[in-house]
Length: 462
Image (cartoon, rainbow, N blue to C red; front, top):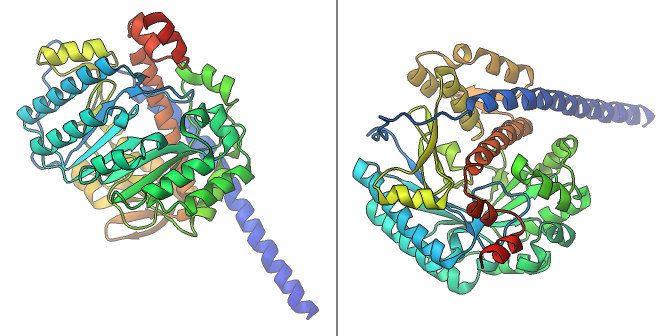
């Protein structure tokens, strides 16, 4: 009996040491990744002036594209959000949607077609009539089979959901947390209610549309392990088909407002919090990307750029990636509508990726979908993956990130998904810096429209 106990204790200790070693290896690998990806992405996203003789690229008939539509209006602004967004103004919203539909027309005239439409913001449902008109219009223009759309909890009413039924396949609702203290810090408690009230709203909304996704944020400065576990318990009993947990990300433009309302960001807890999420969600959900978890198979994820290497963004502040080039639409509402009225694509700047940058971009986006297609990589780049991205692949092997290699694919180990979170966090943090650069070109009036303190806008321009 004593001997069995000793063996059992040794087994437990060995398992503990293995877990401890794996965590240390992940912490070290993630620290290195954070620094490297940050530097690479910062350099990769330095935008260039558009040449005078520039022509918008024609579509590749062999390529499948996803269409993104950006709706940059919110009823109020969150302190952590760095997307292109402005305080709601009915006249500006209606004028904007007209221009957005015209931009879609211009793409159709260029020969583009799309299989999926993703509508983000801002708050796309801020004007339901304009939104539904635009969805119907896009479906008439293109071969769109699936539509994803973002919204907020206060727009999950039966009236709005019934209008979206048959139009939207996946509705993603921004909750961020069910913790009342954190909701107050994020200025969401007054707007959307308590965590219990939001849960009830979601439970009543489940089943009306094919898929409901709950967007959450973790590693908030005042978030505790207990409050995170409670958030996950709410998710598990919500009935939602999908949930996406993003690590808190910052940008220079919102850093001051974020630190004032939420506190300073600390990445040292991020791995532990991600493990808590993965462990506790596994009772109901399974991973479908680096930070998305689904109850069932779904072709719709929160990051459309993961499943479609090439995509076209419409609207002010949107991004496109076509034939190895990144295109950024103007963040100015005035310039956006002026260019559309002139029959021109509303571009702000572009960035041409080097051949190696293209390979890195493929590596990052495809791996976030939990595997790498080695066959397609060799076909597209005329070089095997192991040779084409030797430093990147060597690092991932040394980090113990890869699992099996079969049928032309390398699969990621489930416990290594956090490495992808770090990669995407640094990538999007630098995209936020890019957004800040584009936002700096706005007029004084438009800058005031996108400050966190929306009272400033109303006092100045009401």
